[in-house]
Length: 418
Image (cartoon, rainbow, N blue to C red; front, side, top):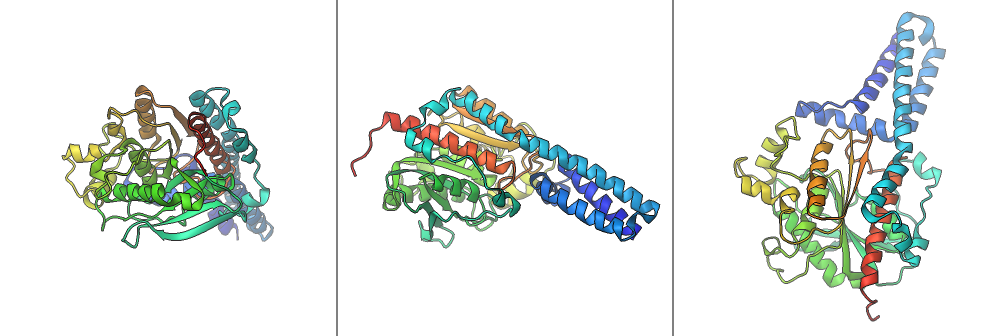
């Protein structure tokens, strides 16, 4: 039994160390260790309860009777201290998010949110939601699933809205991630979609064609085709087609940002060039912003040489124009002013290092864009896939950002005739 406690303690300590210092090279280690750091950093209370409970049980069963068990116990103490560090970092999220919103929108941005929208905002989170870390659709939110917006089987969307909501209401379009090769609308972005739908927004979560079957810009064309569906049909679900924001995570953050920066570009609207695809704002969770990787953000070569060159773009790396055309960072140079952005990224993200987000934010602000940038200490990639002490606070902040942008728009636009 001492050796069992020894092994258990070392595994827990190693996982905790990975959560604060994840490997960024080689690519195989980066991908393989990401789930470990992700789960440890987002569920420190769950991990602490599990490790202390199992450790105590092993000690009582005789694990502390010899020196291997003592070492295992010491390793559990190290793990517990790291988990405490994660709890402290998560507790600071509220101030970080609020500071970012005030820096971007003004210290008094709360005062300009429409009274109806402010009343709909509920920042509290029931503890039961955090104990069971799986997103569940609120009872007062309805979902119309698998609506076709194109002929391909992947061109489907879900519409979320409040059961008692009366239109017209602001619209939020969510694009899932998954490295452009996997992912599903039913698995990602649920915290954000549920939050906004409860507050009266009409939320549209989409699937799109995936690589390797699809080749960029197929993915972006699908996002814009879904936006065309929104313009034509969202009013049937209580949404206001005049006001649409977009958001996404990872590859979805890339596509959402690119869609926001390439409004009405006919190259990405084949067959529906006349549709207005401009967007009122964009929320990007841990997105990819530069396919050219001019700043050498990725220490490993697998991302560009394998994922992009062979699977997504299917173009040689020296085709700079093709990679720049697919990069939100490069699209900031367009003459049209970029819409407001909220960019959210974890400092321990080893799949998409935070340096790329910083470069994008710096360039967007230089172009005069309103950008709320939230750097989350110790957060990993995909941190908001389930409810956690950190993610629920961030999603509440996204809610406030969207409400503020909508309130500004509403002040400048009269209510449509009903």
